[in-house]
Length: 197
Image (tube, rainbow, N blue to C red; front, side, top):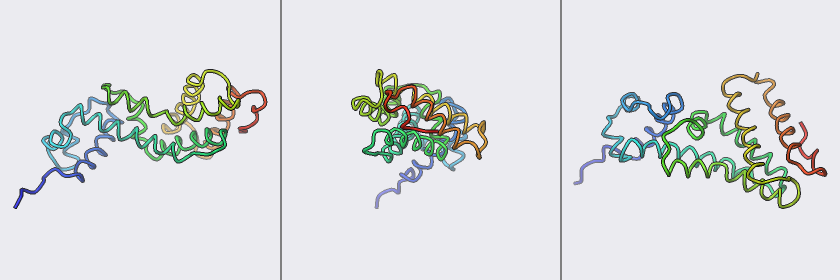
């Protein structure tokens, strides 16, 4: 009869969730002691399940970034305008429902190649949508610049919303107005009114 596994996948998931919450608040330098205490285990579990502290940080960030990308992928539309708007709304919904993971994906961290790659992939769905819209003459300009500025506006709004700077009763209307303003910055003349506040 084999020895029972003390550190299983269930514990690994609990550690990832608890570590995500800690990293969102304290950054990548959080202590392992409160982490393991919060799930009733020891630091040996971290090393057994993840290999090292650095690999734990990578696992946290890759998990959060993958969830973020998956949320954006649910917003696909054959209409390039609705595709981009849908991605923006998907980003906002995911971020408000997963505030800790949102902080992890875009917060301060000790970058490694795996973390850098995960963060690079995080905005791929938006870049792909912007590329398609630009190729169809709906948007103009360099696609990377366009995608980055759209994301910066959406990200900034969400960060402020999560911090409570926008009254809940006004947040939807403010977000719609933001999307309309961003759209007008990059739309070709015949598509300026495609997104209305």
